[in-house]
Image (tube, rainbow, N blue to C red; front, side, top):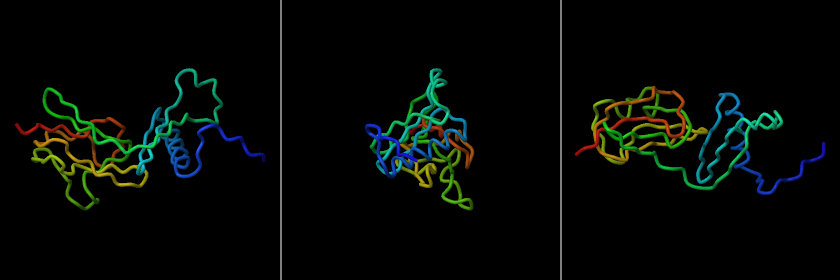
Length: 160
């Protein structure tokens, strides 16, 4: 079979491998968008909008490849506290192992920089730290459930 011509900007190696794996997950989970970071490589895949129906079915998603450090957890102020959001797509874990105690529970006081949870993405365990000191008011995600980029994880009442 003849090889396909290389498109401008196409790369071989870990970036393409990561993009292919994410494309498979995108289709299997029925998502419209997925993003993952491994080291300094960040890959984001997004299905096309309504015009994508004209695209061949063998192309599940368009790839946007960027090289940068994974973002810190997003923090947003709300009327009742500070929301810690997922900085990546992955699986949310409240503890370091299935038999370990959760890092934090509702009512716990936390310090800035304290580990709140782990998000597993592409077999990498990413510790998510608190960006504010305060008391845990709510945990929005159940243990071992998938999370999306920007999804609320914790609500913290900041120390005043």
